[in-house]
Amino acid sequence: MRVLVDAHLPKRLSDYFSANGVESKHTLELPGLNATTDQEIIQIADRENRIVVSKDSDFLDNYILDGSPQKLLIVSTGNINNLNLIRLFEKNLDSLKSLFLDNSVIEINEQEIHVHY
Image (cartoon, rainbow, N blue to C red; front, side, top):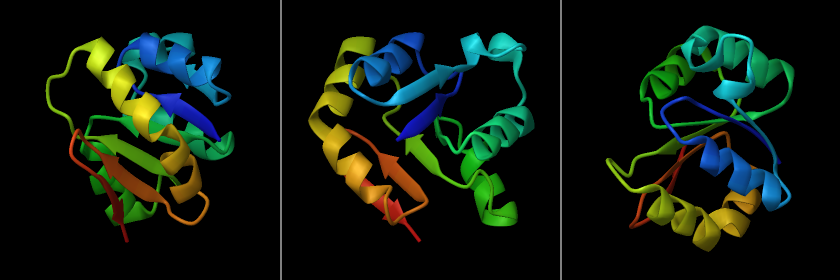
């Protein structure tokens, strides 16, 4: 699994992924840093076969309209502190890895994981 974590989420999440066997980049590691546009993020993610991980619903809108990014994980937790965000992924990382084998768009929050079709 390879991910690209959007600026709306902390670098700490990208670091968590990397420490747990997921090849991860954060927008802070891109040339445009956190000012990288959504379209640039989509192009990079699709070119590098990465899942865009974001809180930004614009990515879902783009997927519905254009089919890109090819894979998307929407984090719909609202405001959540970094520790609880990491705990959410600790609890669900294996499930997410499995779900992304056959699905393109997944949404996660504190209550559930929802697969979008």
